[in-house]
Amino acid sequence: MILTVTPNVALDITYQVDQLIPGSSHRVRGVEERAGGKGINVARVLHALGHGTMIFGFIGSATAATVTTDLARAGLAHELISIEGPTRRSIAVVDSSNGAATIFNEAGPRVPAAKWEDLEAMLAARLPEATALVVSGSLPPGANDDACARLVRLAASHRVTVLVDTVGEALLQAAAAGADILKPNSSELLDTTGLSDIAAAATELRRRGAKAVVASLGEDGMTAFTSDGSWRAAPPTRVAGNPTGAGDAAVAALIAGAVASTPWPDRLRDAVALSAAAVIQPTAGSFDVNHYRSFVHQIFVEKRHAPGLDR
Amino acid sequence: MILTVTPNVALDITYQVDQLIPGSSHRVRGVEERAGGKGINVARVLHALGHGTMIFGFIGSATAATVTTDLARAGLAHELISIEGPTRRSIAVVDSSNGAATIFNEAGPRVPAAKWEDLEAMLAARLPEATALVVSGSLPPGANDDACARLVRLAASHRVTVLVDTVGEALLQAAAAGADILKPNSSELLDTTGLSDIAAAATELRRRGAKAVVASLGEDGMTAFTSDGSWRAAPPTRVAGNPTGAGDAAVAALIAGAVASTPWPDRLRDAVALSAAAVIQPTAGSFDVNHYRSFVHQIFVEKRHAPGLDR
Image (cartoon, rainbow over the protein chains, first blue to last red):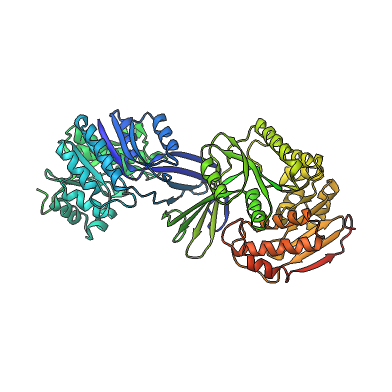
């Protein structure tokens, strides 16, 4: 079973409007609501791939029912910790005239330190039967910068592979804690390290302790920096659609590959194919199965010959 | 006691963002939530003016607590009928760079016919002790066009003065049912009647059965068409601020004036002053007391000499 932690669970709301005009009133034509947050999207993709998953995270009690009802409907097992206040909303306003999504992300309620201890205790109870742990998404207000690092060390103490997809100081500390895989996107990686080069930034995270760093490059694919070498994988063509959730699909492929001990070039090929197949689907956490199967044979993987830690 | 009906209660949510840029992601800096809908805003203003009020309406059970908690905190008595689904949201995104509000209005859940019967029964129980009834705002999905007209006839059977502020076929039928006062804004009045002249449109509603029609003209004030004559009232200066809720403040003044049998020119003066004082306040349902007291002595009221029903 693969455990996924979503520190800042969201209620993802999608509004369809005829045309978004700032400063005016809009009639919302359609409303969709679902459980969101990066770790939950990763679990959706893993579940669709046939992996057993368990979702962990913090959820605002005032609107918890909408989230848990949606997870139950999707057949996704979860152990969520209730906190005071409403679950944060993420509202995507989709303009029907051009398909553009304008997104409003609430910060969400504060998570008290005691609730983080509850999370660690719940994970400790499940880690003996787990094959991997994914910690994905931003941290809620009030979280300590070492929150992800603590979960990395907890997984390591159970000899469970751990992947972290976050940003900033929490990402740096997850590296120092020896995370097996870090998966920032390129701008998060550069912002976090303060460097201007992807390879140099990934090398810096590996120098701090991360075993592997995979940077997603948007439409250009992905680059992996590992102790076995470095590879870059690119999709066959640029894919049009909704990039939200593409990174989460990549995380799902990378952790599934780690569990199966797939060679890195194959993991990366799978991650780029699944990511592209997710872009085609309008909602985060879903992917187009036929496109995935087709893409996976068309991905170009190139070995990089980089200096430094890339041996 | 003045009863107010809000057929389509809303959860009014206000987001502060740095700058609204269509197609991009925004961090929401501040979130405010309160009970909304035109009838509730009218009750807020009446309550602030010292009138006893009772709020009626339909409320989606899934998010009812947020609405009722807010009403209780404001000291507003209410008898709300629970319906399935979430209360509709109205989200105002306020751009901090220029103060402009971009609004997204959900349609809200359907109200089954049996719940309208429940509403009529609850109103019938309160009308014997009521001095007036206000029905304000759009109808929820699934409502019959005669929904407001039925409430007008119910109030009339109890000899209670009734004001209706709505649009379209529901407004036409409220006129035919003999509503004491109709208060559309000018564009709603023209759209509903299909006419291009305010006086002609108001005369048409009175010909159908309405006793008086008051059209709000935005920054230009208000015009009343009654059996005692017609008047126009204009504010002393154009007032900058948030026009949301200005019409509801006018409704509160008009119904309070009707209860007190104030002469029409004074009612109109009061409505325009309160409306202008509401524009100055950022939230719907509140007004600036000092500006109200000052404005009321500065409103210019002019008798109109219109043909037709204006005697």
